[in-house]
Image (cartoon, rainbow, N blue to C red):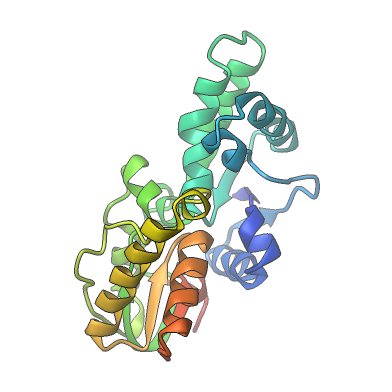
Length: 238
């Protein structure tokens, strides 16, 4: 089986190790990975800010870039949700691009969704020695993915999993939300950091780079030694 990796903007710019970890996990499972070099932003920042015409420009580029018919794997619930849920709406009146949007939506999967629900794998052969908790990224709910990351973590050898209080509450990032409403966003991430510290873990795991960036910054400002890790970074370890 061969898949195409959509690495996402934040991972490309700030967390390249997440893309590398994703490829390593997939290859360990016998999956060949293609990386379309022309990929850029999926258009979500423009869409969320109301600039739908600009979002369509980027969406068309993404649809052309991933037009090879392969399954697309995304280490991000938010970008996967943009493609699966919003692309069809962006082009709902366009007879040319709407079918292409529906096709890519069907082929696109967030990483944990692909592993658990497409491959049927929960134990990827990972080993991680340490106590960790898990923050649920908001867009996973929109995709109907509620347990997949936790099921993967619980099958990692050596890992002690500690449930997080109010794990499904937003960390306050929300893309441009954190810029528009910094006071509210800051209060939300402070709550999230306090719950994480309460668990006594050495690391918190999430599936989205935006959450990781926001939570990591808050923990650092609080003087915490707790690490932030993407799910792929845990699953790649053996």
